[in-house]
Length: 614
Image 1 (cartoon, rainbow, N blue to C red):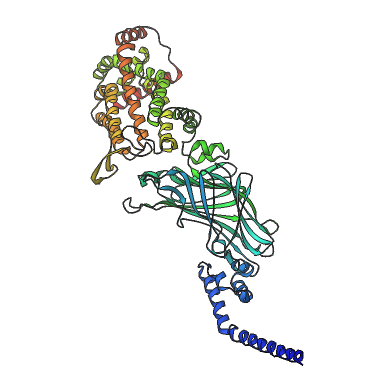
Image 2 (image 1 turned 90 degrees about the vertical axis):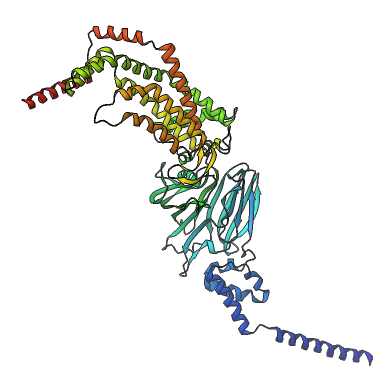
């Protein structure tokens, strides 16, 4: 009897519990309005492009199907990625001993790139990417009629280690095994990393009748003391057509078969390289500095657009990213033609820099401070060019000795300019002296001087290296601020350009001052003014330039002054030169074809002049 009673009570208890559970399920089920609100929230977030970090929080296990349906209604097949835990704006960090990169789930691209071993002029770490100054996006159409941008979609990160390399896979998923992947491989001690774009299982998702485009944009941060000076060497450089290169400093350009594009920011560079050339590339560069006092954060903005080609309905591109110094040696070691990013000059000027100046200065900088290395290199160059300079000074000495006789001819034929010129050339030819003999050695030195003019502003080894009062040989050596701004000069005073200008003036007075004054003729430009123009140009033009370049010119002109004094006082004897000239005048002089032709032309001109007077 008691056992039967127990069974009835148990049954009643189970029925009561079941009733309570049914009542709880009924009272807690989501109302239709609540489901509609959930879908509305998802829809608004997708439409606005706002981060979907709250999406996963809003989805409970009982609401997964509703969330997926809402996401797919806006994103199609890629709605799956919006329902994953990775659909939040989280950051994944990978780094080595020189570079630290932070990659965002949203867009799968780098949100921060920091160079570990370098500081800006005001001791802030060097960031090439930070606070949204760069974007990387693939725009594509889907087979169901949608047009999407990867920058608004969420990738799922996965970090692994392969040997010593750190690998980050960012997957934009359609399903667990179908996705678009960005793969980053960062190697120890390298600024260059492997980067690939590939898709798996998306051949039915990408619409092959619509173009896929890759867009990469970046605004260059200011890193140097003078933003205008830094801007002079900030440009977009790209390689095309199997090895040709070009640049855009301000404006637009377009080219075919592009293999890399570099956003060069004077001493730091961001480069995208591809093993499969882009069919075309469109490039835009814009100067962001209109007023140096106001526009102090960014230098220039860069943007590039490339078409992407589907193969078998899938993407498969092997690329590289470079985030690092604009250092010729580092870039050249990659053997990818990246040395062309450096503005070393064209033709012979670039060859002198690449094969002579850069290796030699690189050797010196390993053993001496930067300022001493500049002085030693200057001494070596002057010694190398001393035979050429000797011929130049010798020609000047010959012309100086002939000056009295030339003056006599000028006076004798002052009413007949043609005859005066003809007799002067005869005298110079017999004496073995010619103004051109002094010009040719000077012209031979120009390639070296121009190469050095290109080298110093681009020499990464000079960056933040001090010497004497100059704190940074890659920037100006300010010794005083001005309360106002002087056009073409600036709002400060640099000392090295002043000293270099004084040295140039002294040299010109020693070598050409007297000649210029003697050569002054009525109606001709004031040659004495031209003698002052070069030092003035140096003073104004170099006030905002790298002090290392001004140090070079100062040292070079001091050495030149010393050599002139040695040559004039101990090597060249004007009395001996005069005696030699007199001997040459007595000897029969065989004219060359050019001299003979010139003389014939002058004689014909003189005869026509006489006929005209008759």
